[in-house]
Structure formats: C-alpha cells, structure tokens
Image (cartoon, rainbow, N blue to C red; front, side, top):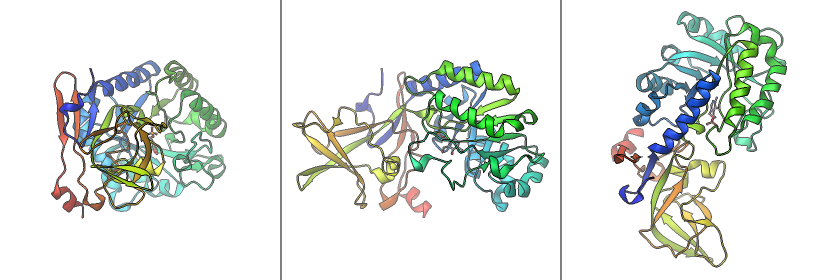
Length: 376
Ligand SMILES: Cc1ncc(COP(=O)(O)O)c(C=O)c1O
C-alpha cells in the first residue's frame, strides 16, 4: 500500500512511513556491516515529530548551528557532531553542551575555541578541503577554488595542532560509492599522513545511499577497508539519503491563466516558499501522473501563489485538461524542503503529516497566522 491521497487534506507535505523505514533499513545495514556511525544531517530534514522513528535505528546527528545541536539533544537524545564555518563567542558554550564532536573550519577558529571545547570533553576536529568534488552544480561544490570551506593540504602544511582528534570533509553531492572511492584516494594522498595520530574521520554527506542502483556492498567494502587500514572510527553524515523519495507535497489548482499561448496552473503552494531547491539548483520536480511536455497533450506551467515573477516551473503534460480543484502532487518533497521554507508574501505554510499503512494520516504540524506574526 502507499499514501491514499484522498485521505490527506491539501495542501500538505506528507511523509510515507513505509518509504522512510525502507531508507532507514538500508542505511542501518551499511552502519552495521561497515561498523561506522551514520549521522542524520539536520540541515536536510529536522521534523522532530518523526524522530521517534529515527530513534528506533540508532542514528546519530550532525548539526550546523546551536538550534540544530539543541534539537538533536532534546528530541533525538544524542549529542551532535557539529560543524559550522565559524562559531560565535556568545553561543559557543551552549553549542558545546549539546555536542560530542566539534569540527573547526580554520586554524584561527581552532585556536580560539579548542581549549574550552577540550575542557567540556568535546572531541575536536578540523574540516579539511581535499579540493576534489564530483558535484556538477557550483552551488553544491564546496571545493571550488576560493571556497570558504575547510583548510587545504597546502595551507595546513606538515603539522596538525595536537588537540585535533579527527578530520572532517564534505565534498560530494548525490554521489555514488565510486565517487567516494575516488575522493578517499585524494584525501589519503593529501592528508593520510595525519591519520595514524587521529581517532576519527567524518566523511561528510552527499552519499545518496538510498538511490536505486547505489552499490551498498561496494560502499561497505571501501569503508571497512579504510577503517581496517587506519584503525580509525569513521562517520558519514548524509542528509538527503535519509528522506530521499519518502513523500510528497500535495497541492490544488486554484486557477488556470493563459498568456501568449502559455497556460499556467496557479497552485495553492509556491516554488520559492515551499520547494526552493527547484529554483535554486535549479531542477524540475516530478509530478505524479504528469510527463515532460508532449506534443498534442494538455500542457501547463505550474505557477506558485506568490508575487515573484519567477515563481513558476514548466512544462508538464497531462492526460486531461486541468481545472480548478484538481490535485497536483509533487514527488520527493521531503528533504531540503520544510527546513528551507519561508512565509514570503504571508503565504501560509502547508501542514506536515505522515502516512502510515496501518493507521492512515497523522498531522504532525500545522501553521497559522501566529507563526507568520511571531517570525517577524
Ligand atoms: C558539512 C555537511 N555535511 C553533510 C551535508 C549533507 O549532505 P547531503 O544532504 O547531500 O547528504 C551537507 C550538505 O550541505 C554539509 O554541508
């Protein structure tokens, strides 16, 4: 069975619990077989209403701010592995309270905060930049020349500050295990000399372990080989992989307008407010029951309900003409959506819920005027 869209009131983000659990099983399989820690990167998904499900699988958490670290502590019951390009004096003490590991982005930051981190028993790491990424999108490439992320091998030189217990890198984007294998070869060449002295390596995110065709056995092998060679603890901190293809954004057509032969279905949701990656990256999402533009079929742009002229995407073809009241269901709208949404134009945020094959639809979070007002 899967989500019964007639039983979910639109607009709504709906997570399919069965799909979520399929992803978690696969990730847990890697964690157990390779004896590595796998941390959920909260930046991709932080709907704590479903954390009880995460808890069943024993995943850790990776945080990029005090708020994320605190949420990990309060709602997932774990101390976070924290990384931010720079920390602030006014929040570092709280951040350390909620963190088990902290990675610094520069030697300056390390020198500024390593003493207080050590005093609080937090393991200290340094983010390195291997200057290798397979990301085809500049916006998701932390290794572009001039990048602000991580210290390069050349700048680091031959000595690692003695308080450093681990290295952290994040360079991949929706990558397979073969990209990680290539990255590890570069990492070892540039930073391998430090590994015998260290306790851990955090291999960042970008591992799309749950994508169809991902070679899990190959990943397990390279992680196990790495661990055995260096006798070191290994962590991965994927975000997308946990909630990849686990749910939908259900919307309704409010009106159809036409200009210069282009028909636009105006929706009760917005790309800029509710699906921002579609415009930022950009990419065209899948709509259930629709195809890319096909000659001879009713074809529409989808228009967001905001004032931004660019708040639209196109084009999709449908079997039948669209009318106000028709449902438009966007696929794969769980990761990097609800963590990035806005209330631009005061547009109400779609509720968030979860579908269980056993018990049906359960609302996790609704939004109202007070949410809009309190933000401002
Ligand atoms: C430091 C770091 N770790 C983990 C992630 C998660 O990456 P993904 O969601 O692609 O797996 C990101 C994404 O930007 C990141 O910057």
